Amino acid sequence: MKKILGLLLPVILIGVLAGCSTAKNEEANVDSQSVGIAITGDAHADALDATSYDSEMAIYSAVYEPLITYGEKGDYQPGLAESWDISEDGKTYTFNLQEGVKFSDGSYFDAEAVKFTIERAKKMNPTTTLQTLVHLDKVEVVDSTTVTLHFKKVSNQVLAELCATRPLRIMSPNAVEDGQVGGAFQKAIGTGPFTVGTSTEEEVTMVPNPYYNHENPLTYQVIFKTITDGSSRALALRSGEVDIAGGTLGQIMDSDLQSLADSDDFATYQFTGTMSHFLAFNPDNTTLTSDIRKGIELAIDKESLSDHDIEGLFQSSVQYVTDANQTTVSYDVDEAKKTFEAAGYQMNDNGFYEKDGQDLAFDLVIQTAEFPEWKEQAEVIENNLKQAGVNITINTLDSESYYDVLWTSKDFDMILYRTYTDALLPYNFLNSLFYNTGDSHGVLADDERLSTLLDTYAAAANEAEQQSIFDDIFKELSDETLAIPIDYKDENFVTTSKIKDFVFSGLSDAPIDYQQLVVK
Image (cartoon, rainbow, N blue to C red):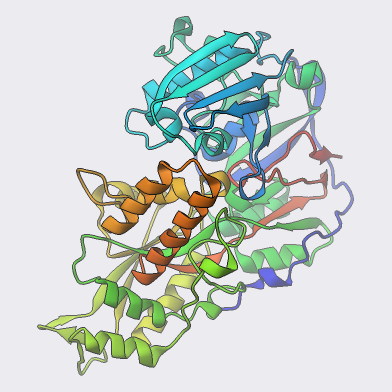
């Protein structure tokens, strides 16, 4: 299965306007065109608290803005904060805020709003692993445009975490009951381009924030439409039901992408991404030892799964990744078989390896709502491993059941998953899924050396030391085959002729630069 994305040009010229609808937006007092955007799940706009994880990822950035914006490989840029200073010991961060910015209710953004948001995020997320919240000692309001975060220990991920789509984008205290840190959420009030209009399970309409960009609001509204199937998202583009689809908003099948790219009615965009897709293992499965995992990796033909040259778990666009610290594992079925045999397995009459009467057999859990290509990739992996004497059963789940299996029931042997993106790579991703706590092993690994290395990195304030530690982390991931990368994902989007220009924000989980989006 050669992926067709390599055939797509980074930018294909946009066609002419096919038509547009207008609606009077009384709140912003402008005539707004409607732009339909495909997403994979119910938006849950009624729960769009900036400090929560309760709504669809894609809609947070339409309402809330960050203090810091993501720059390539950790080159962070100003957001609501114009500048910042970090103490030499890595324990104190002072942010100088923009002046004259207003929330969508007309109240002013200031240091008190920053303090409220961060304290609320800490209160509402007691089990978080984010350094900004776990290590927080206090938030000090110096004056209306200056706020200082004091931490109990070195915190080298603060800028990265402030970039993320949630839970640290800034919200107004007026969004909750009585403006209290622990108050019940009432209404999404941010400084971003939109406010929530009407919403159902199928779609949510967001109208321009009249106070956005110093009271220079956008002239279009957006309608996020829930479409859970990749092929259906392509059909929605063709019918004009949506005008933008792709990326982490809602991926489209590769074959559909090529077909849409061939049409003059659509524009196709490709941007460098940071996400990887990988095969992960259940650390509770004692059969899946390091040697067996290594044999499985040797048996998988990665060239048939991706147009990219697959090396380590993370793409070269990820911070700390260099040519020198990545390891390539080449496809070698014979070597895979030798690995299994060295572990005491013998081929049986059914063509599978067995030991002590048990086949070398595993279930592979996937979902296709967010990642439709996983069906075909899982079938390739199943066939590859069959040739190497490993019996794989593919279990395709709906999105909700898939995440329940991953995070709660742990009812899987192997699972296809994706890395986080951008500023949350590589540390926060690994800390979230591969780190052993005092109570239990990681979600996807039980590796004490890796956990120790992650602890060492978290306490390192010096950039050279941080790089050296991650060189060791990448080596441990490869040596122990803790995850098998199968694809590096670009950011691919398709727009209808209603969109004159589409600009990638640079942040995978909030990909649309609404201010630069040009609607005809």
